[in-house]
Length: 178
Image (tube, rainbow, N blue to C red):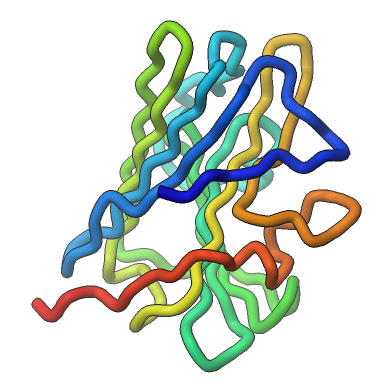
């Protein structure tokens, strides 16, 4: 379980905590879960059909960054409660951005309780970088009234930047042999 921290320059309104964790990893899927506490006013983008979309970070969105061991390249996954998603490869810090080919779409689902929400995502293992490495887990949270907060494992800069190397603060183990 990884507690995420809100960036101090843009605090949340009612959200009090977000945790993220790896639920499981096998030869088929990487399963991730985010739990949002104080989610009564969470803005949830409406279902807009599955498929790729850009700029999902403009409203509530969940992100995973995977950096294989021994290099600067990394992959970003953007996952929306609208069931839209995207995946990008980078050659280094914000360099060489391009869409990552995926064998199939990630699966996403949001469940909303009275004071909390849970977002589950399953990313196809065949679409992940090979091996283990470091992992960044983050969330953009929009609340009623227009408050937008940015949550990550760490915030090294004056402004939110999920691509910053310090945000890759968790370990992603290699998938077990099939």
